[in-house]
Length: 82
Image 1 (cartoon, rainbow, N blue to C red):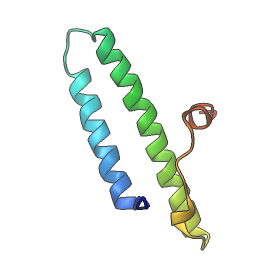
Image 2: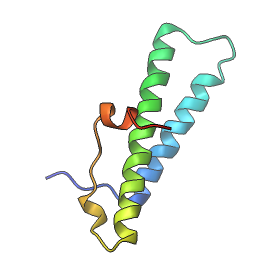
Image 3: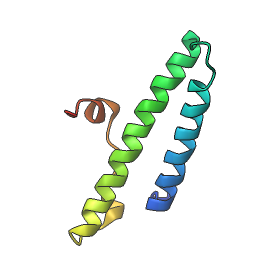
């Protein structure tokens, strides 16, 4: 059985993803194709993590079970209007 993520766990994941993103961008010489692909994957993972955290917090604020929130698909998260 997979354990549901906690807000703290999601925030830790966000911080780790941001740190990796900063490290990639700090290279200063432009990014290789592999680095650009990894950066895009990091951006998508960050979008999904932030979305899950927002879902959990919204459920908690409305008296619902935050553990009922689930990670949405890449297509769903990436299609939101900014």
